[in-house]
Image (tube, rainbow, N blue to C red):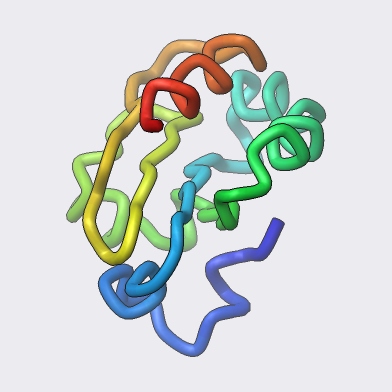
Length: 106
């Protein structure tokens, strides 16, 4: 999974302009984020049509606020520059919940 810091910009319209992306918002101190993190490689493998981008919510607080990400872990999906779905709340998420969300985008 690429880190948002690996991109030359944090402008999501530019980053997500072509293709399908899932932003994974998390923080180091978040136990629910630590719960889903070990499942992320498997989720990425199950959904190769998406490029997953890791976003440290604390490092990119302005972006999180702009996208109304108040709870983590959270997922925001984009296709060709447009937001197509979000799984945003403060609840712990299971692999099945994240995969059901991603399947619902098709």
